[in-house]
Image 1 (cartoon, rainbow, N blue to C red):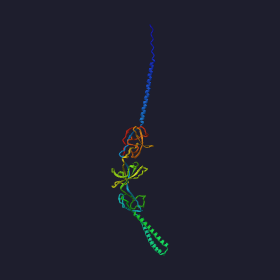
Image 2 (cartoon, rainbow, N blue to C red; image 1 turned 180 degrees about the horizontal axis):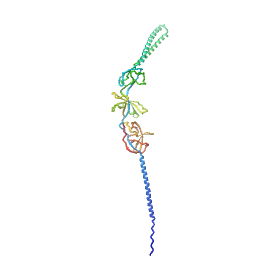
Image 3 (cartoon, rainbow, N blue to C red; image 1 turned 90 degrees about the horizontal axis):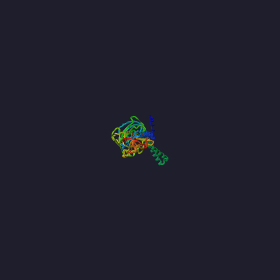
Length: 393
């Protein structure tokens, strides 16, 4: 039998195939690594973008409003009598009688009360007796001086004696004048036992009664009566400094009082203090109100509305829009590029929840309604809503 042929040995893999396999494996590994790096970078970029977005403040903006009160100035005031006279006693004694009471109308010179002053009466009697004594002494000195002058003309007595008698007459005449002046003074003072009204008006106060002890000239205490002229009333208002130039004399004023809701009284600015109170920053002005019907009462509270020129329209923003820090009072606005612009402002009037701005804003500004803490010029913000203009009451 022929011998068996041994099996053929396997052929070794080619070097080229191995190289291709290794290259493909390397490409796959590189692709996996690159994909992982790219995914991580993309995630980091998204996270950074989300973080930056969350870091931008979200705000709502408003536009300043002129409101319904843009041409008027509403201020509180206090009504006072046009003329008011506290009546004090000039003589001491006891109140004998009074003839008027509170609320009664009186005329100038009308008797209000009488005072019984026995001490003054006795002083007047004594002064009159002293006057009579002085007049008698003057008459005797006159006769004596005349006789001595006749004797002196005949050279019967010395000239020195005549001069002495003449000088004594002069002294007696001076004493008579002094006694007469004392009587006149007490008579004038005695006339003040009758207390009369100084002008037409009404009795708004009575602080005495029959038999009450009256102290003379006690102006530090309570007045016996107070007479007030209420046909016209004065109304004092404090006008903020910014509006003083606009409130001229003869400016018309509308006045309302709580006891007559819906009724409007007319007044006119009559006087201005022409000075600014350093504590309040206002100028006191006086308004005159006709009160012929007697409806208004002195001492009552009143609201006033002063019409202003249209050029003095004030812009109003919510009080929460104001920022007050070491740089002063400012308002945060948003420009066209969405960046913050802080504007210094001044306040014309503080109406509580609404503040009228005197300067620093325009009607086109977009004001951040409630600015977050830490805002600076140039900070980006995201506007999510535009609120309605601030309403002025």
